[in-house]
Length: 168
Ligand SMILES: Nc1ncnc2c1ncn2[C@@H]1O[C@H](COP(=O)(O)OP(=O)(O)OP(=O)(O)O)[C@@H](O)[C@H]1O
Ligand SMILES: O=C(O)[C@H](O)[C@@H](O)[C@H](O)[C@H](O)CO
Image (tube, rainbow, N blue to C red; front, side, top):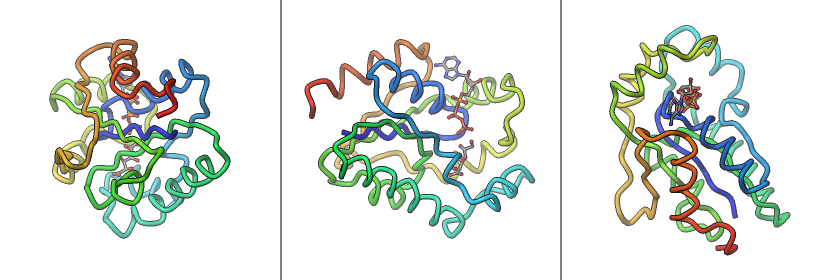
């Protein structure tokens, strides 16, 4: 099984994803490591990414997921996956892949981003993240988890909802 941890920038994907992988003893990969350097430079410069910018990045994340599934090695990967069209190729109806979206109040997320030091993605871009965000429809079968709790409780909740140790 592969779990994709999604959500806008600052929603806690890296914090929660890393902890989840640690608790399960699974491999972990970080969305930002799949971006071509031009995308990182663009975000660092304060310009939001377009669909075209995100295409090679989503393909690289999908390839990571495919490799894990082919090898029967479970993993956790983060990916903002803001739009339905981004989520479909990663998790849509694929057995063995589940997507969890961290979602919550913009002010809470903004405050966390402002407190976070040394990250290339500035809180000024948060509006563009919420503008692009398409909240998952029920038929997408995405687990939506509120971000207001602490990371440990969020991970507990994901484990309860997905029961990954059952091998689902
Ligand atoms: N549940 C939480 N409770 C309190 N603080 C949190 C929580 N989750 C994350 N944080 C803090 O909020 C900030 C943003 O979290 P994090 O970097 O994990 O988000 P992200 O979604 O991975 O962001 P990005 O996509 O920009 O890399 C960090 O400083 C992190 O320590
Ligand atoms: O889809 C996007 O706009 C990007 O992937 C962003 O979400 C960033 O990569 C990340 O969240 C910042 O670290």
